[in-house]
Length: 293
Ligand SMILES: Cc1cc2nc3c(=O)[nH]c(=O)nc-3n(C[C@H](O)[C@H](O)[C@H](O)COP(=O)(O)OP(=O)(O)OC[C@H]3O[C@@H](n4cnc5c(N)ncnc54)[C@H](O)[C@@H]3O)c2cc1C
Image (cartoon, rainbow, N blue to C red):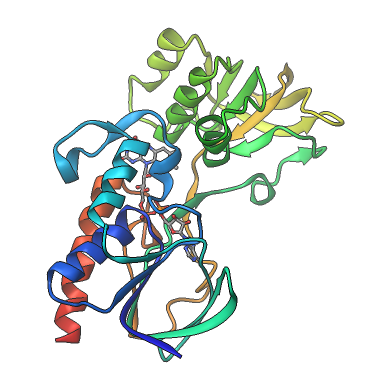
């Protein structure tokens, strides 16, 4: 069985930063396992500006930031298209790669698997299941990675910062959202988010608006909302569910298996910026290096 000092699960800002720092601290036998075909994490498909300040004192787009992370990981053992499918207490992992399933083990395993937005299935929304319903992350992959326009007039559900990232993503391909809907009386992102949405993007923000159901046979045709005790129908051709982030804990639903494991970045706790995750990755590396000394 392949054996390492440290295995890092996830090649996003957290994982790549941790791998770089561990190597700089003299821990040589480090491997990063990343399920996507390319390392870099979420920033790979965040085509707008807003990355790199905390780590490099630069203002970059997500893909540019991801490219810098990959450059700084040059020469390290980063294995893409490799998914960890199971953890066991003694630091052992089941891993699926291009040559099938194998077992690996390490003295320490750092989980850096990031976070995910709450999908429709977990939001208890009624109606039919037409095409054109997705999270911001999936929208960004359509738009920035595959240059595909999945709809033209969607509604955006939620008003967190990431909802504004969805707006920017829409604008990139000329998609014009018909409304941004927020269940609470105030938007979740700080002011002037609602004014930016209204005046910079021409998108009305409707607060106290609860999504009841999605209509449509093949494609989305409308949504039904409840606002101040009244039902309303909004014609649209897509629904973007944004925010309500949850750490990606599919590998450890009941907690980390043993003290041979730790987590960092968005896999641990609430959503953070990519810069904060990059710093956390470096901090986790220092802790691990101390433990292994
Ligand atoms: C839509 C959107 C817009 C954003 N905009 C900004 C912004 O403007 N500025 C900013 O600073 N931050 C922004 N962020 C936040 C930023 O993207 C994250 O903070 C950062 O990517 C977190 O880094 P991470 O390494 O912890 O996780 P991620 O970037 O999510 O990386 C985790 C990696 O783990 C891999 N992985 C998961 N499970 C497994 C497994 N079982 N086996 C192998 N690999 C696995 C994933 O494929 C992924 O590559 C945005 C986030 C989103 C969703």
